[in-house]
Amino acid sequence: MHFSPEQLKVYFIAGSQNTNHDVDELISIVENACQNGITMFQYREKDSSTLPFANKVAVAQKLKTITNQYGVPFIIDDDIELMRAVNADGIHVGQDDTKIEQVISTCSDKIIGLSTHDQNEVSAANKIDGLDYIGIGPIFATNSKAHVKEAIGIDSLVQLYALANHPAVAIGGIHLNNVHDVLSTDVDGISVISAITKTNNFAKTISTLKGEL
Ligand code: TZP
Ligand code: MG
Image (cartoon, rainbow, N blue to C red; front, side, top):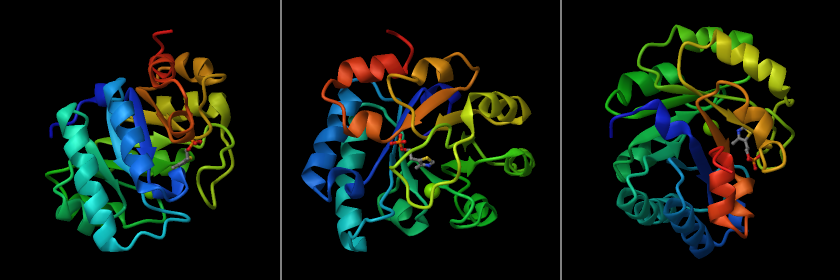
């Protein structure tokens, strides 16, 4: 799938660890999120995830069938083998994951994203050809990621986005009560886990994350 920065607008991330290891609930949430307007999805089995590879492939295939129906790009977190197994649209890696150089050289046909946290990481990302977008964060404190780095806040988001020469999505602790501050920056989009996995109103949550409400 061709990448365009508008796809970053509401970038939902989830894996079985975000639904108490209930895979059916994960699938149902992703379907609801697609129906209500997310623009990109990342399947992220990490942290306390216990799914064996074969199960990840089975879940990823189901999720990709759903996201395809809605034209939502399907991205895999840090697993080239899984990405290939289901012919996902892209791959996202963090600084301590599979090296971005390896991802670029082996996945040039895919959408490629990289997480960044500070000026050094954004400057280094600026020099990487073939990178489609960066994540900047965590913006606020979050419980959704193990070993998460310190929250950087809105002022640092503005500075890092100004420095960046790739489209960027803000991530970490973004909820309906603080998304307005993030939307007031120029950042291309908002990425969330719990704002969507824990919502009881998908339509309202996703519209608010888009800045429509
Ligand atoms: N990377 C940086 S913060 C984060 C990830 C995967 C977790 C975001 O989850 P939430 O629930 O939106 O804070
Ligand atoms: Mg990652």
